Image (cartoon, rainbow, N blue to C red; front, side):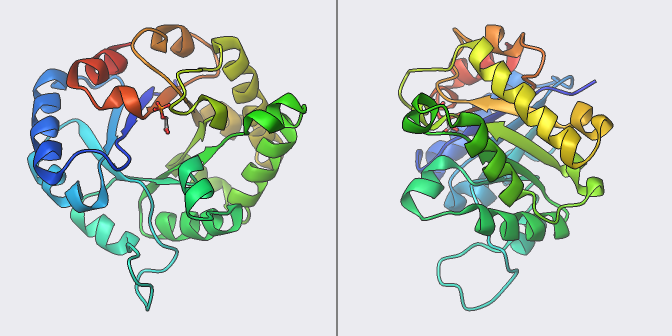
Amino acid sequence: MRKPIIAGNWKMYKTVAESVAFAKQLNEKLKGIQDREIVIAPTFIATASVIDALRFSNIQVATQDAHWENEGAYTSSISPASLKGLGIKYVILGHSEKRQFDNETDERVNRKLKNVLKNGLKAIVCVGETLQERESGKTEKVIENQLKGCLEGIGLGDLASIVIAYEPVWAIGTGKNATPEQANEVHAFIRGLVAKKYNSEAAGNIRIQYGGSVKPENVKQLMAQPDIDGALVGGASLKVDSFEALVRF
Ligand code: PGA
């Protein structure tokens, strides 16, 4: 009942030309797949060209951020209204690298989320604990606070446009992935939080992706867990064969 969603986050990799060539190759390989959502998030500068290369494709395009206003004096920022006009479907918000390097906060994610939804876009909202937080037994508290902050004032009707990505910071780009059971435990906890804040139907419907060193070798076991509905993938999404294997898990 929850459609799996496999997303590739390209971070700051690939030039525009490389991105377009890659998108075209992926499009050939993944043609006709309809039983799962396929999303790629190129760099901002490659977004328009990648969308052009994927007209009529089953691959949807995301960006890695968007601003909380549609216009204004915000040097270097990206308006969700222009993203919508381009044909973007998803916006990734609150990625741990934005939190770490760009001072992203739950409050900012919340403002951005509201504007993304207002523009008719969908969002992938990332949460996750650091190694230190996990080792000191704070995982659930951290996730609960992040989710509370990010979803503040978001109504039940908007939940269908939101995917949550659980990405333990210690597993991102480190090769150290959470075991499928460890990941599922947090996913089930997140689902419980959604049930508490909204209702059990909403909790049953919301999709929760796992992210952090997902690769072709471990995606199947992760996806077999009852509360894991997809993957948000960095490194292993940057090669055509590897991303194809992830999508086909
Ligand atoms: P990774 O990145 O797959 O390279 O660990 C995941 C992410 O940052 O979303």
